[in-house]
Image (cartoon, rainbow, N blue to C red; front, side):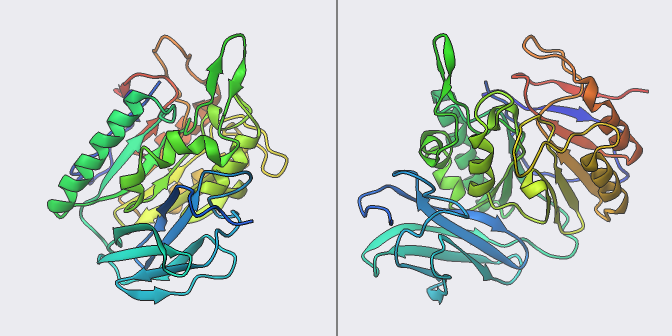
Length: 351
């Protein structure tokens, strides 16, 4: 695992006080015997989205469009939540900045498949925010497991300090395929089974309490691996706020303190949602320019995969991102999180 690159642009007038966050960049129904996962798909100041499923079996077994695993009972603070028929997820309204315990029980109460504690976000104008940033992480190796364990430890510490981790941002390459000698990669992420050792298992403790809000990398589609990776990515994550191009890019706010912009810098192809582009004249560039202009947040924080400037050994700078950087400078963005090059590269503008 390696720290994510960041590009530091002229700081805004106020400072975001982040207690601690991690920046990383690194190289029919289901059987009752299946391993299930319950996870927080989305959270806000007004409620939570809980999801569940398994990565075992054929087809879509976990995520928004997955087939129902069977009769499921969900409770929050011991109160039942109505689950829509045929759905492996449910949204529940909750008051802001409060803690709640939930359970997900399968097969008429005979099997507990998930439980956890969630804390809704404060509304209005919070004065602090703690979150993680990881990137290029989903290889299923010992490094990923070690970092996931460290993240869980920090999350527990932050909970005790009453400054909880609220979410995890990713800078892309969420699921890597397994390399094969002289052949293309296999198990690239185009099936839910590929996500077990590279997402749901390593981050199980975190996922029970906080959502992951990702951005796309070249290994999350056919730019480097399989076109089917993108569809599974869009199905397994529950993106917050305003989404565009089926979720390839989006924005969400943490009160009036910070607004985040998950952008798509990849060339991944999709018949339904083509690559939106970031160059001059692209719809994504126009959208983020206007979104940054109108955002009332004190901090505006884009995150995406490819860095504009790169001094590492494996990748080069990305001239195609120059127009995007101009927009970020013009809108006085304070910090950008990137991945792709597997080392830490802080860049500060001095002119």
